[in-house]
Amino acid sequence: MAACPKCGSRKIAPARGFEAVAEPSSGSAHPPPIKVSIGQCEKCGAEFPTIESRKKCLLAPAAELEKVRKAMERLKSENEAMNSKMKEIVAKEEELQSSIEKVRSEGEVKILERRYEALTENVSYLRSEKERLERLASVLSLATPLVPSSNRYRTKT
Image 1 (cartoon, rainbow, N blue to C red):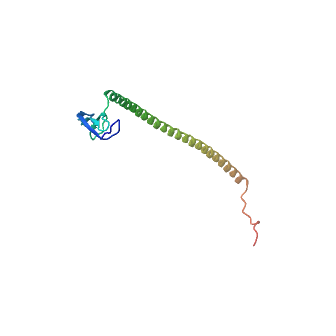
Image 2: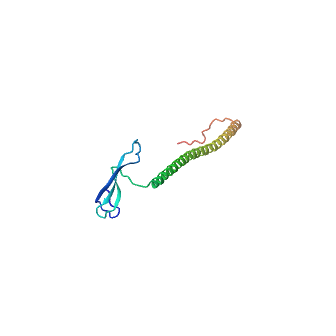
Image 3: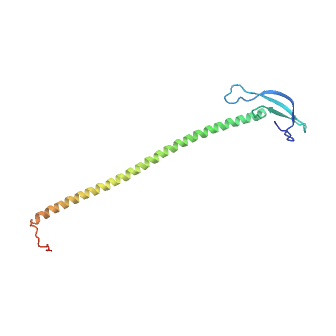
């Protein structure tokens, strides 16, 4: 039940009434009828429109209703624009993430290539050192005659 806009009293006597058609709710084909009445406050005598329905409705002039519709359309278009920008940003973020991963993997490849080069240099150095030591060993083995081992340094216990 509505209250008087002047004094706030809930004692309202319906003066006259009529049925109106409301906006159709989303999903329904036919708009529900709404019973609108002009109520009169029993306390102060002020007349004002009231709506007797389960659904809450607001009586507004057509100009205000048109302003609200235009504002809703503008907000819907802004929302769509924001959604498309958000999708673009998400796509850009995914692209940047993939490029970061690519750069990171390229950096790891470069590190591994440097380690490979260092290991290759170490292996070649060790091979040349081995060859040098083998030549030295062969020269020394030819230079010293084979002498049977002597036990002169052994001590008796």
